Length: 138
Image (cartoon, rainbow, N blue to C red):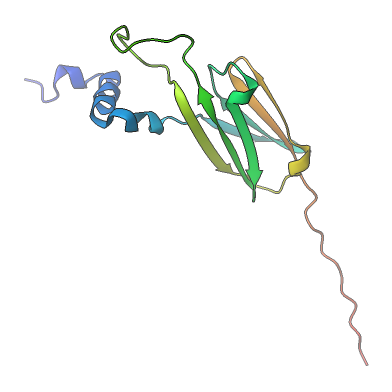
């Protein structure tokens, strides 16, 4: 005799059970994954966001060394709950914030979206350099 019921052995079933239990709250759990790469001159954030159709559906902000990516993924066509037999793709709003490991030049950021990947290129900024202070000595 097995201790775990058959329907709980599959992780997909766990997710479906949680979605049924949490209802609309379950949609807020999804957030895109982000890789941060460093080159000699810039930081590059690569973010998986499949399903974006328009430029207006993604918003990127950098404030106080925190990169925030948010937006909305729309379904490719209207689907009623009766017609939906299985839902694994996410549709709805998303938001993700990550702290950047070093200062960047916020006014020179550029971004591109291609094949479900958003790339945000953030040039490194010049860190404030120390200045030697001359002492007035009598």
